[in-house]
Image 1 (cartoon, rainbow, N blue to C red):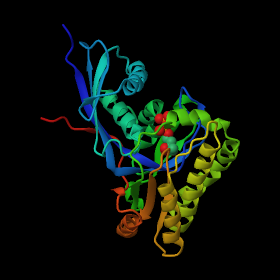
Image 2 (image 1 turned 90 degrees about the vertical axis):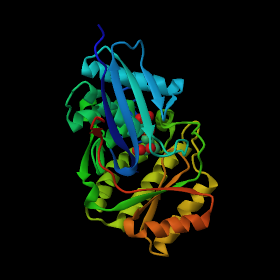
Image 3 (image 1 turned 90 degrees about the horizontal axis):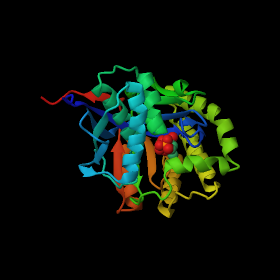
Amino acid sequence: MADEPRSATARAHSNIAFVKYWGNRDHHLRLPANSSISMNLADLHTTTTVAWDSDLQQDTLTINGAIAADSAVERVRNHLDVLRARCKTGHFARVCSSNNFPMGTGIASSASAFAALTVAACAALGLRLSERELSVLARRGSGSAARSIPPGYVEWHAGDSHNASFAETFAPPNHWRLIDVIAIVSRAHKRTGSSAGHETAGASVLQPARISSAAERLRAVKSAIKHRDFGRFADLVEEDSNLMHAVMMTSKPPLLYWEPLSFAIMKAVRYWRTVEKLQVCYTLDAGPNVHCICVASDADRVIARLRSLSSELDILRSAVGCGAYVLAPES
Ligand code: DP6
């Protein structure tokens, strides 16, 4: 007789990097070229239920109630293979995932998705893994997912082996009430996603310069966060984002993620900070949307200014978030 399915539900938050991960030393293991820093986003999360079921003939995946595209199923299946090996099960899994942020807004969900999947899959089998081991495992699904496991302000140590590459908290969520105000410049699906982008990073002559200066930038960003020094933080975060995009633009083929409106917002943010004295800076991931990082007391003013730049702009807002966790079963 088949065993009862064993299931658990977990939630993980998305994160925004201040020192970026771009390029891998080992693509298969997702060992990054440099260590990175991020904050979790309290208001953007993925909730995932995993049911290991001996009756299933293959893994299944729904996202927001709809059967997922083949490419997503394949990526989840590959990650479930990693988890099956670690959890010593040969069963297939039914995976139901939902995001609380609107799909198709160009906000990457792989970090929260693979963190939630990892935590739910292990919990369903009753495995009590440490935060570090969950981060190591989540990294195999998506590099930035390693950073969505621990709470608050997080550093992902690049490491030189599978078990040495993990993320940990260096300041709790309530340490500094920063807000991420995200200007949705385009909802279009990226033509080149992060995974393909990491593979082209090494083709840029600028990547070695970005990598060799990353450790010092990371030390300085961490220190600025610890001392809540917004001026220093802002200059470093913008520099790091510009450096990553300079690498992207000079890869072969070049990756040009900025839209004219992205650039207009970046310039406006610098004006608001340097002339109007708002505590805000920008950072962009592998897409045109602009993350405006600001102190909580300036968030409403930043949103009003963004609206005056373009009334069409969709805007999301998030405070600093906690780590990934298992949800209590519904009774
Ligand atoms: C630009 O973690 O999405 O957002 O490991 O291939 O899933 P994969 O890549 P991913 O890369 C994130 C890249 C980034 C910068 C960052 O978050 O550090």
